[in-house]
Length: 398
View (cartoon, one colour):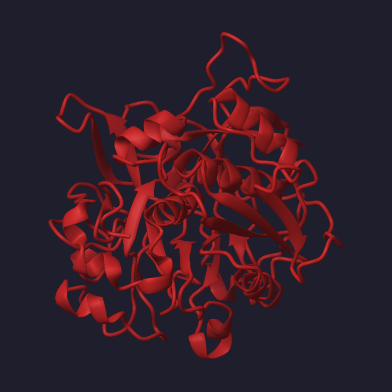
């Protein structure tokens, strides 16, 4: 029996010490490389009115410890791999842009861990001292919330992926007091108020109405990305909000093609139709089959079997150092970074990819489950639920 976060009413105790079970979990299945890796969810399932982070960490690697390890390459994809896979101008674009990372609870070593990641891969320092990095609480101050190891892993993942894609962007980390939608929403408003061009959100809970929470995500002129979920077919909020770019997930592997990479749907990626929120106008032209808002819009790598390298020193769940992560928590900050590279957020909205789908790699293989209408869970030419319109081919769709 698959364990998912969409349990009845999502009334599952959310304690920082308990991680989701991963027996028969999508993160452990259908490895495109033929090797299935053991994983854990970084965060527990949410109670009603709250969200869980979407980070999935592999537990079968031997982490490199002690920061930068000369002559040793961390497992998992690094910045050069992701930039190559998505044909990105990361070396030359992104100056003047600020990517905000909104997460819950405190990661006290966020800045120092980020420094290790960037140094390992030859990226320029991004620190408080040089004005590149800033960390605030949900009100914009420095009264940080309590530490939580699972969300600290999520924060490290998000900071590293934003850096990998847009190393010239500034980074604003906004830490919500708890993982309630009210506190995460307050942090979202603070990120917009403090001048972020792009806001990345790697969390979700049960599908909900914009009438209840939409004011937190309605920030015209700011590109807001949200991960679609890690439990396969089914919709989560805020990915289902009318005001955001919902980001699905793929498995990314090297190939002998001209591109040098190939992708298929990751079977853990969330998808489907919101029961509450208005469809994007751009979705009317792509045949989603949803009466209301369809998820996802675009996608990027999310499969932990083809995961990314992340540095986190938290020592949570017995894991620290260089780790390999997946989950749509990877994809959301990757797409946020692409928005940062494009630099167009002030003049576009989340319909923009629908009129520029020619600048995306179409994902046409794979599935995330069974569903009433095939395109909600199975890849096809054009839009489908798990991968949306596809993955970045440069920045033209953003």
